[in-house]
Image (cartoon, rainbow, N blue to C red; front, side, top):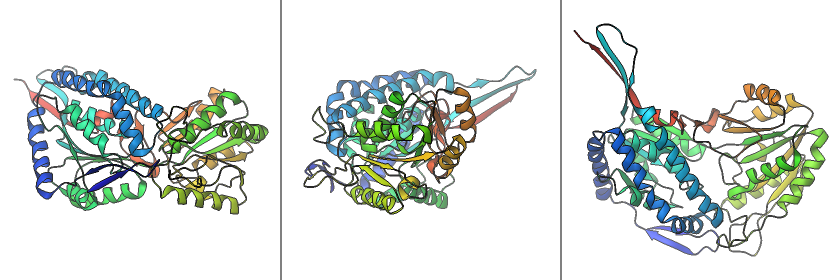
Length: 457
């Protein structure tokens, strides 16, 4: 049995059965069969039906948010916000579906009819992570369905109830088994990756596991795979930044969801002239964060989802300290509590070679380093194996444009961070992944181009 434990009090949330060989085979067969029928449904009807399925999340928003909090510790207010954000993201993809997926008819050429169709792939295997258990799977599920595919969803074993909610929501489609939830262990997951009934894989998770998924698929199949992996996202606070606005947003970008976001601010570079003031403002704000029961309205920083993260974060802090960093706040787990709590941690004078500056923390840690100028900031920001996002905090658009050209990341923000705009492709560089979700480009991952080239005489 899969056991899900509440990270706040270590109490059992639920027990679920793993798939059997028979049940898994039956679900894969049903997904293939559903796809063959669903691809024949006109696009306008697919759009209408997928839109209607979202009502499940509206009607059950409070219960779904409660399930998120129990499973992975996100404060209830943040879990409710995730439901709302997920609905907004899904609505945007629905709004652009017809314009994006309709055939592209080329300009007339005498004697010929030419068009480009966006043909569905088949069955999409969506392997979703636990940190945003609604936002991550919806990036694949909604565009894949709209494009005419079926989806087999393997949610994280930390948040399997969210997988059940997606299956429940889309069971009202006119064709059954278009969104199928599966509870799989590692060997079963590898088996599905090799299965010929899978036509695309969408994976969100760590770099290490993402590479294993990529290797497994590449060894056995010639199909595409989308990888949304880790980040070590840098922020640069230039000397002309609005400090009250900037520090508040950077701290929130680092500590929201207890820092368990792939696009969270993980390291901060500050112009030397404003360095001390930034440290002072950050310490004041982080000292106000309230750790506690994530179901309580007063809690602004919940427990970490994974107990093993406490040791990793402690190691990163101690490594930075050995290299000369100063611990201004926090730096250790909360003692004498059952919850997986790590104190919000502010580190100053952190050298760029420290683990906390080079590896993903996935915790409420803000390491800060002083830089002499824009060029030093840029060099340090690019000194990473990751390339998800970077944020530039400046009132100078020209400076932002200049730095953005040379930043090797998927998204560059100015005066914003830790946010996905569904109108823009969500993509990464380097070890942060391959492929794109959201925006029109998010549909292209779940379709293939089919050229129609007819001579008409």
